Length: 188
Image (cartoon, rainbow, N blue to C red; front, side, top):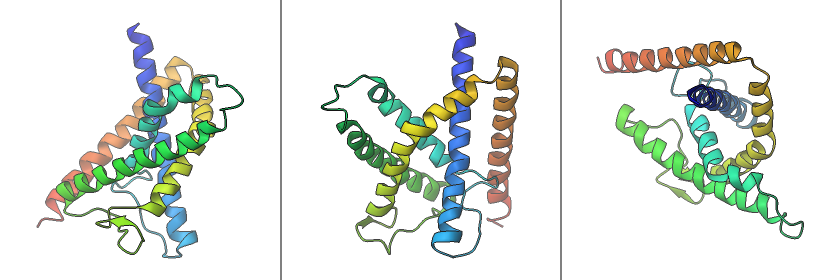
């Protein structure tokens, strides 16, 4: 029983890690290709990941996995993507708002600014990004969730242990280094 729980935690962590990397790629794509601002690290850590996207993915799974897995009559099946879109938009917006307050508390600011967007709240959240996060949630739950599950199910227990352990070590080291640099470099 404990082995199954550990394996589930390892797989969920890898989902988190992969979503964090995809989120970072999405942020860089927006910055470089869409807005043409030039490249900068879009995450709060050094590595190519934005953990808030991993948190969002896990929240989407927690909130909507059962809805995604139940069989619906054909006559109402069309409602599911709409409910998932609206739900993911709301969940992601709440997570982004909480993340902005946590980052401001820990670092004095947050790395995005929506003041120039219409329908924003304190520049922390806005309608346009919320819609994009809802679309991302639908894409994840309908496409990436299955791909992540297939990828992790192909791993032997030993490979799953190694990959999840290495990813966890990389993330932990990055968090510690970022924290220490923030304390000792930014506040001198």
